[in-house]
Image (tube, rainbow, N blue to C red; front, side):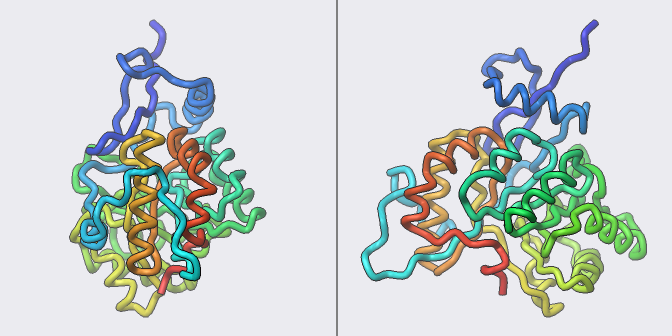
Length: 298
């Protein structure tokens, strides 16, 4: 009996899941077929990349939904462009789509999973392109069915094991200048554990971006208390993998940046995000200055 081939399907509002290849609605482009074939060599069982029920920050709710027109209109003449940073998380498992995102003429920031099969070659490519590089630190989720993957940090670890795991994760992404959390809805709520991890990052002069996978995350607050440069995700761009919806999320990111001068978005290496960034690139760059994430930490 032939093995069941699984494919990562679109990120629903509650997170992502896997469906059989031939499930209803699971049609795939040639590019996605190539990606999945390549990805399966690194992780034959598949990987879930985000937890469900990701919170929306208060500043995003206050900013409102943004305009309906995809990527909106140009700002008023004479006004300085607000700054935005777009982090592409979960890099290293998607060879084809990851490479195409790396080759976009956009100043994206790339966050690499330390145990991913294509992380070594792709993070070197990102470095040669002059992009900001982060370590996407896998951390324990609230629900144990969500596996953060290789190199994960768990609350059951001793302080020494936490420190050693962080060091091993950083060694896997040698050109990184900062880190953000992968999953971590349970781990980031624990101040003691986060203080141990962040103290280790501080030894390498890293900054920390809180991916904000739980409204009770202590990541940004603890980083600031340690005197580290830090920031927090404002908008997840592709919880729904639709080009038009992602363009709308980009518009929300720009609206928020216009109100507070800066904003941080997080996307993922999937075809819909690639299509949205390609489609909306020119309009996006007329409304905002796209910067590496290091410019927005403080």
